Length: 231
Image 1 (cartoon, rainbow, N blue to C red):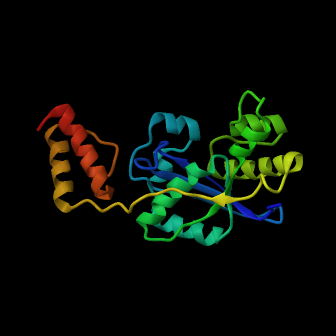
Image 2: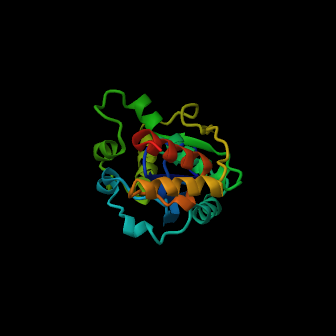
Image 3: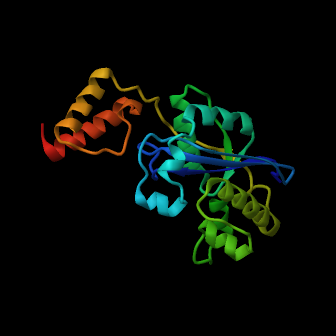
């Protein structure tokens, strides 16, 4: 029975690690089934949040503007987590964002994981939902939705309940987390100047910081402006 791990959850600007950014990391270190330490930090995404993200998480742009860079927060999280197994509700989602950030920071990050969503789908197939809030309500677990640390705590408590009710060694093993990603190259000076010229020419108000964009991001935003407004 696995009883030592780090339960982790992220809040992000969207659902696609290729385009979206981490805005909060929350984690709980569990040793022999007991929560021993917590980790929590905002991350500056260098872009404005969509209204839906603000409504869902109650995180605001004002809270993030002075938050540390992902390079700083990621190193702190990796030091906190060590080499422990990662646990989460749809853990590959969180791992994919962390992996992308690690690759961009030139940091190694290979882990095994346990997915409480996968376990719930297997052992609770008759429930109308396997979303974390619903499962917490089903098991009577206190829960504050859509903040990283609270979700990490809830995933840990859910895992304990699932182990109590259904644990079989072969089903509750950790498995390698796999997400393939390449390091993103920084945007060139010429690319950023061209994008800024287009923004100025068409008098656009953008929700991102041009200086923080990667090569692919600058190309994507430039193509969008050209497609909509022309040269």
